Length: 166
Image (tube, rainbow, N blue to C red; front, side, top):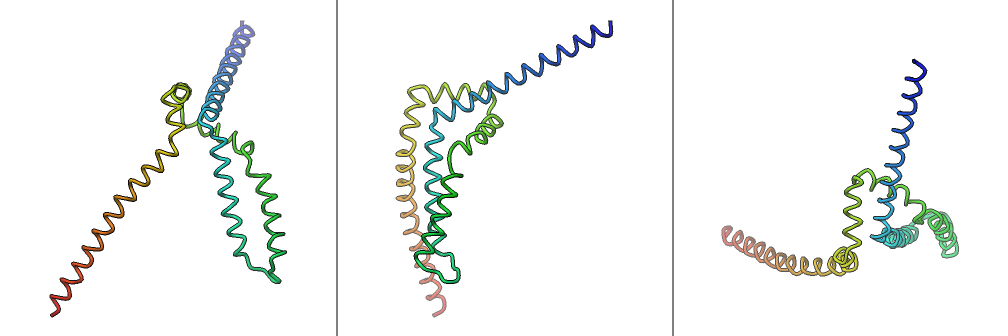
């Protein structure tokens, strides 16, 4: 009887563990699908290129004995070879899947996948960059007006202070 209970317990635990792994796999699969739909790899590729550009700018400021253009090119070549090996999507994708699976439940990921697969979701994806640029321009117009008003406030304040001194 103890043996049967033990075997049933082991089978039950194996079932729970297998179910947990299946749930985790489907959860991770949804996170990966979400990243595919939202073109995360392409977005990160652009970010990687920006990182490389910034690094090249920093390298120009590196000082060392016997600094010259030929040695600068060698330093840049070595650095870029390293970055080209490291800054690739495959080196980051598992970490991104981990984060999405941690932050969003499986149901939330299903909802996100459904949304971004819909016509409205696709429109959001295709217009996000243009939308951000237009919002930035709108903000800049408002900030310029505020800046002019602040300069006027400063000028008026300085004039008041001068008058009070007289």
